Length: 208
Image 1 (tube, helix red, strand yellow):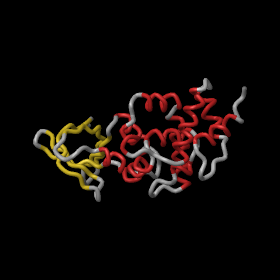
Image 2 (cartoon, rainbow, N blue to C red; image 1 turned 120 degrees about the vertical axis):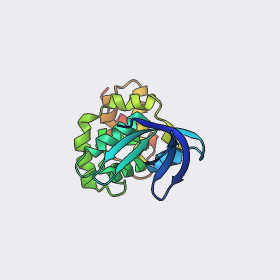
Image 3 (cartoon, helix red, strand yellow; image 1 turned 180 degrees about the vertical axis):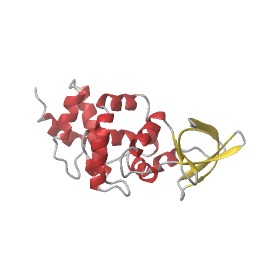
């Protein structure tokens, strides 16, 4: 397996969702999510992408990610029945890895179903199959470990991000991460709600 490719960025093909890196005299064509495409440097600069190699009967296809955790998450998405590489990249384009983890843990199928080609039924199946493979502690560790690249280049907005921030605010107030997540999950959210609104509503569910 090719663990990663480090080389000079030759060019990007946005319409194909690919970038070509030259390493050791070889040009590697690598598929990336829309979020990672936006993070690529200028052509001619060096970049390292952690890769997932898909072996098909007619081709060897490389998928690239800026972190090993994102590559692992991509592999977990492929393990969900009905989701292929295109669908997995679509999910990671619509949601940051942090948003996806919290959406799964918060049972937020609506947020996941916003990804192209992912309906509500598939989103619920994804949550069911990934819930036991993720933990809130790991989600926070991943965030704190420095998976900030996507947020800096294309910060996510909307309800899911607000929920994430509300959970973080509750843990900062001294509640356990499991208590915080449980409270936020009980909040009936609506368009226009911000972090403060969700936080106030979640506090009503907290056991003092």
